[in-house]
Length: 156
Image (cartoon, rainbow, N blue to C red; front, side):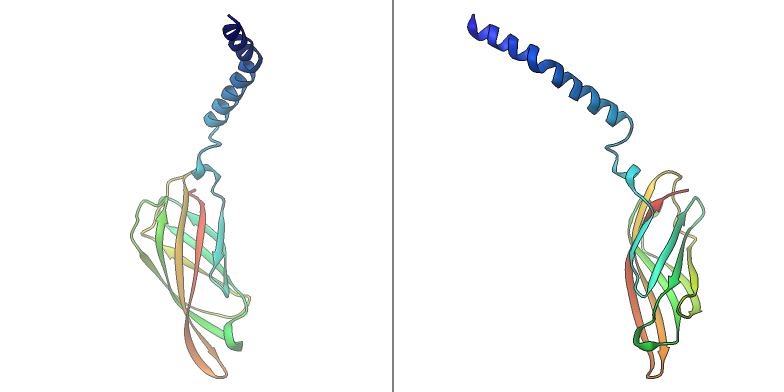
């Protein structure tokens, strides 16, 4: 009898707290708090000496805008040849694609990489790893470099 009473007192004491925790968890789940794709924000990392200032993906293309920082070895200008994307998540395609850019940039200037084969669904998070190939020209001559990084955002 004492064990039954003890179990009943335990359930009456802590049962309400357990019930409240379950209700809060269900509410948070229904709001999408536990959905990792809903928490993807627009971001980028890497690509030095370039900074990805925006990445817009929609049903027709992915466009990545870059701003040029200080070029290596005191170079006055650089020719950006192409950008290749790989390691896709959230795209309609999942194979590596390349955008031909052919832009001559200086420190502080900007350019865009447009991937017409990569599309996204509105509201769905996306991310990809990328590599920019560029040739910097300075007093000592020209050299070819590769800048790697990642981009992420939500389809529009």
